[in-house]
Amino acid sequence: MTRTLADLTHELLDYARQSGADAADALAVDGTSMTIDVRAGALENAERSEGVDIGVRVFVGNRQACVSTSDTRSDALKTVAERAVQMARLAPEDPYCGLADPAQLATEIDSSGLELFDPSEEPAPAELQDMAQRAEAAGLSVAGVEQVISASAGYSNRALHLAATNGFSGGYRRSDIGMSCVALAGKGGKMERDADGDGRIFRSDLRSAEDIGRTAGERAVAALNPRRVKTGAYPVIIDERVSSTLIGHLLSATNGAMIARGSSWARKLLDQQVLPDGISLIENPHRSRISGSKMFDAEGLPTRKRAIVENGVLQNWTLDLANARKLGLESTGSAARGTSAPPSPSVTNLELTQGTKSREDLMKEIGTGFLINSFIGATINPNTGDYSRGASGFWIENGEIAYPVNEVTVAGNLIEMLKKITPANDARTYLSRVIPSLLVEGLTLAGE
Image 1 (cartoon, rainbow, N blue to C red):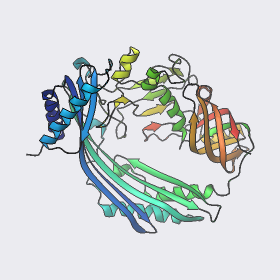
Image 2 (cartoon, rainbow, N blue to C red):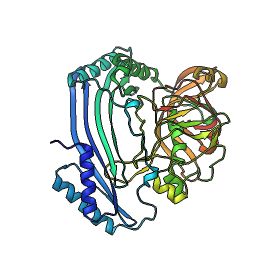
Image 3 (spheres, rainbow, N blue to C red):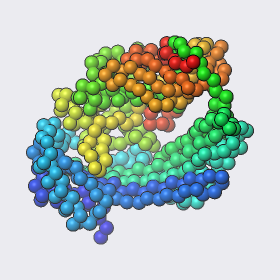
């Protein structure tokens, strides 16, 4: 009889107990993924992987260790459990590690209402190749595009199950399908490239290959003949394509692991103003057909909708059990993990309050400034929030796009920058992170 993922996790827990563990949890993941790449209309690369990974975290007193394997034979699972217990006995003590109390565990664990898995038939490799070829052809059809560097389509589905000696046992399935296209425009030393892509849970929601390829080509052509700008302080609009990176810096700074280490510029900002009045940042892990959704976290705790920032005021940190215990707080149900490492805090789906004006309206308001659609690298002081990033995009004059720009460094301080953002109304609501274009006043641009 074929063993299920639930069977495997419980078998591994039994071996952990037999080997001397005081407590344990086990995570098993069964996944399949395919990726097809095309170039010049022909298949360039095809990859498919299938496999099961299973890992156990054991506790011996206040010591813990994690071991994982892809071998699901009973004797292999027994060896894994024994090794994990041996390692835990040699690990340093951690007074904050440990499983959740049974009273903390999620009771509503049925994920079917979240629609995380597309039940339609898995796409054949030929179908994925056709999607990639159509995207490439659409990119090449744009005047000025010299070649499509890559056009890819991929699919994955995976099932996971988490079980622990505190009584938790639950799992779910996910699927993903996506396409991407990278186009190159121009000739010789004056070539520019840009890209587009889309990824969804349900194939029926995916944008067309033609739309993705054409958009990649148009973006590459629009970036031709870039200029540099003079150094100075200017208003900056961060395009919706990359605006989530700015909010991502706030999320990193409010991650419980950073706060517990005392290495975050936001460590003294709880209950303080971090965004403008009227702007909230909401986490909602229960959105249907969204990749970040889940009913329980990696420690079996229930997930819930919460305000990270409400009306501009920082409400809480993002916490798993261990970091919550270090800080004398409660977990926010935000633990994430793989099979070979302990949990750590992580956010799921996010939504920033959208504004009432379009990106174009904001451009008209500032008159002159810089529209960023790509960031390159980052230098951020984790203690002070000082911020510096390479960027490219378009210069705005008289409220309209005037010409492409590259080789610019944008600098400021995140604490002050975030307080000055003005959101547009252009966020794509089907993404896991619904973040619109953001106007930030008075940043320093280093150009020529």
